[in-house]
Length: 314
Image (cartoon, rainbow, N blue to C red):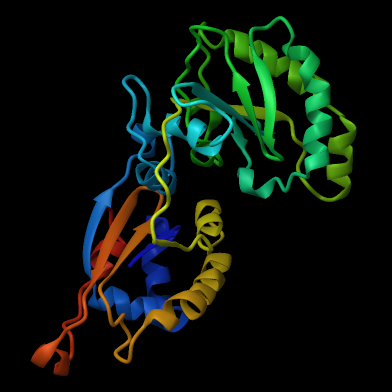
């Protein structure tokens, strides 16, 4: 049994304090951390162009990074599965909010956009004429995401919007000659969406306006492998990425009660071998749990020093 928990590893500056709360808020997970054999590993978002969870999803689906592209390029065909023939490059455009500060800009976390299908349709109706004669084309895949086709020869290196969200945009936004056609088109789209009725309605609902598109993907479609029998628990993902540690603790308590406790045997750990994959921003930990049989099962299991990897870089 494999259990994947994105967002399970908090940011290092707060990890030690949150570790003190685990015995009370997540007693089942705490007992598993004490009993399991951990294999921590560092994760470099810049080297992958995607989050650790997205990286795992791509590996599970059978994607092999292509020469000259980051692994995150595979998110294009993965998220557009069924909309592109095998062997075709797939680019995506996430509908996002670009927040401008005094000296920097950053993306709002895309999961907080709460887009409605009719909003996307209206924004696309406004933007579609701007694509004519540019070499770009567009089609909607979902309320939050469009598929783009780029002019021949344009293959920029980009990263997942979940990686870029909350970071300084100038560290991820390329200002080179190659991407100038895309920047020009995007600027026209942004002007067309300024004071758009969709954004007026969103403001009335207390939501951020849709004022930009984030281009990413570019990988070539492949036959996606079917999902395995693993369990993926995503409750911690958004609060971990947004740094909402109060919400993270609340979500952790529910996850522990609803998902982990039913899998625990009489001794607090699973009665059958289990593997946990705990994911964070810059590290991941594979935790192996094996039941102790025979005479060993009569003895208290040795307690592992899990805080040594929980609160420190891998």
